[in-house]
Length: 234
Image (cartoon, rainbow, N blue to C red; front, side):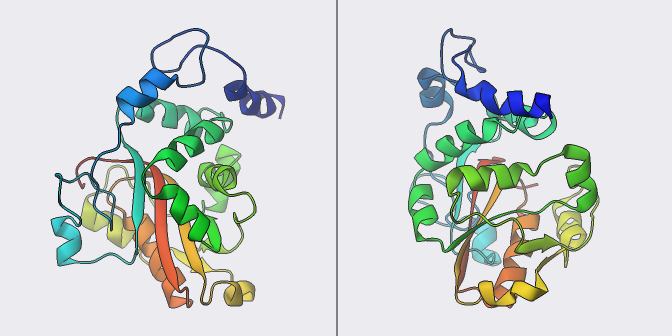
C-alpha cells in the first residue's frame, strides 16, 4: 500500500523527464511533449493515423465501428509505450494525471469529455484487477472527469486471453460478448452520451465490443478516448 501511495505522488514531484532525462522537469517535459505528441490527422471513427484530408480510414468505411467518435492523444511508440508499461504493469498509477493531461490536450478530447454524461473505463476481469491492484483505465477516467467516471456500470463478463498475440480477426472473436451493463443499473445507460476510456488501442476490438454492449443497452451515443493508438491495424 505504501508503494502505491508513493507512486501516486511521484509524478507530482519535480524530477527528471521520463523521456529525455532533463532536470528538473515535469514527468514529461514540455519539449518532449511538443516533439513526441504533436497532433496528427486521425480517423474520426477509430483514431488510426491517416493522411491529411482523410476523415475516415478505409477499414471504417467498409465496416463502420459502433463509435461516434474516437480520439487518441499519441501514437504508440517512444516514449509513450515505455511510460504506459510503467503505468500499467509497474504499480505506478500516479502516471494517470500526466497521461490524462496529454489526452485533454489532444484535438477533440476535452470537448468529448465535456459533452459526455458518463466517462466509463474499460473494465478488467476480477482476476486481472486482483493481480494488478488497480484498473489503469479507471485511473485515467477519474483524472479526466472525476464527477463523471463510473467503474461499476460497464462490466467485463468473462476473462479473455491476452490480445497481444492474436490476429485482428482472433481479437474480435476473443472479446465478442465479453462486456455488459450492470443489470441493476441499466436505466443509467439509456439515452446517455457515453465516453469510453482506455490506455492503448490496437485493433479496437475491445472498445468496439464494449460500445456494442452500451448501444444495445440504449445509450444515445458512444465515443472513445485513449492515450495511445498503434499506427497500423493489427
